[in-house]
Amino acid sequence: MSSPVFRRILRRETHSPRTVAMIVAVVLLLVVLVYIGVEIVLYLAAQPALLLGPAAAATWLVGLPTAAPAWLIVAAGVVVAVLGFVFLFLAVAPGRLSKHRMESEQRAVLVDNGVIAASIAQHVSDETGIARDDITVGVSHRTVDVSVREAVGVPVDKDPIQQLVAAEVDSYRLTPALKTRVRVIHPKQNEEDR
Image 1: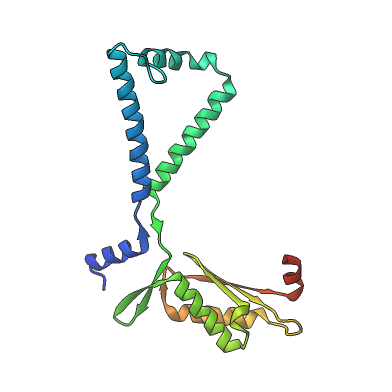
Image 2: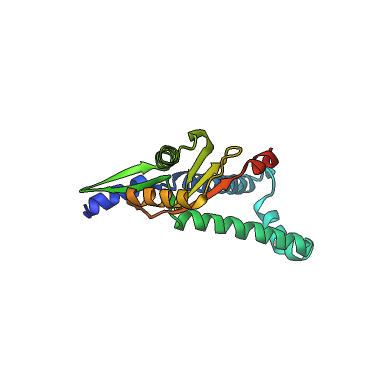
């Protein structure tokens, strides 16, 4: 159960690859490098530049701090810093797929969050008698959010539903563990939302 191969398979199935971000970064870098290469070749061939030749670009870059307004330089610096932070975050942070690992005797099963949500909603409906259409469940990486619409004239107590959902989620033995939140939507709130 805890072999390196098994752990690698679970990680691969629960985390998303960064392929798209890497491809975008590589394509942008290639476009910039191709453009710089074309400008250098045109400069060496004594042809007019497409946008800005290497000598003009160097002169513009050296004179930029005195030629442009300070707010423009600061804004450009902030944009570059934000882009750098986004690429750094994408490179370091693990991407998560909407799946959880469920322990079952000697096996581990990967379960999609949508399946967990549907199962919890059906369980709450079966145990409380509340119509399935009046129960909305959302499952994220760390939480289960259950919203129960109260029928007109039929009060719903939040605490028993909270206990019911917590017991059901605990019985799944999910990794990572999920916290539960339950809220009751009263008919007055339904009318205000519309």
